[in-house]
Length: 338
Image 1 (cartoon, rainbow, N blue to C red):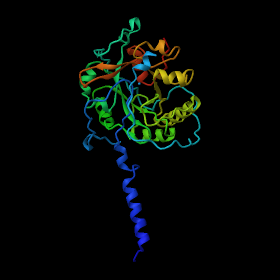
Image 2 (spheres, one colour; image 1 turned 135 degrees about the vertical axis):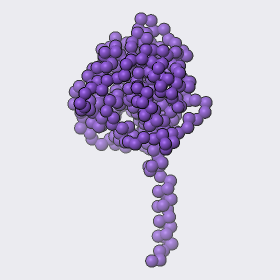
Image 3 (cartoon, one colour; image 1 turned 60 degrees about the vertical axis):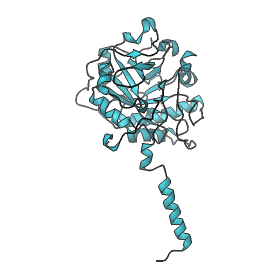
Image 4 (cartoon, rainbow, N blue to C red; image 1 turned 90 degrees about the vertical axis):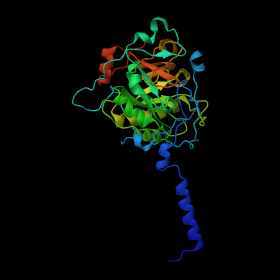
């Protein structure tokens, strides 16, 4: 059947639009430029993970924060769909026949390019240390990192509603193979709805038995293409939507990672029944976040270790080895503030 010129032109236009859309499979590999804490970009670009590497499936404190702009502007925020809140109950874990315990704890052997004297409150006095990583650490030798004292790793997975860290799948697989307890984190973007971001995280992070609870990373990023700073009420609403969706899917209460300025503006007195991961690289968390209970403390953004080029974020669990085994075994409790 002969088509008119107008019809042919319309069909060609639709095809072209489909070819240039960023909502298809290619969008999965858009590298994220977001980074937390003080870890800086390497001098050369980090290669994306190839197809063969894929698997199915965080005053003085504020002066140390260095973040990087998003590479791609996000669309305007849309209205959040209504979501029924989850009751504030004890953290849930996925059903299993027997507790999944962590590997024996490796002792602290990290060095620090900018060491801080925390005195009697030094993180060295705590038993279980770990790291958080993203694409900016490049190809990590997880076996060497484990031997240096990394007992757990939080791995950047996603940010916004369409950015996936290109090293996530490789880091996710190799951290587990080296005997580290692993978890994934999402960098929250204030120009996208919480529901979209939760769906994106769920789409990319496997629901794996024995994994650490998922993390929502909430910070102000002055270098981001998103300049929006919602009201405290709106921030708390968006976070609740995101965390409720993740808790339903993974069966674990998400952990909240934050930095001093964002905490001061939004989180004091909020989410008392949620575990917190606090960034405090110049003082103990009790000085920066008085009265706040915490599970993880990010105490350095300038760690040095065999197995990774450049600097790496260092973290510590709030408890001894027995508390760690209980926590990863599903008997999770929010540690008391000190």
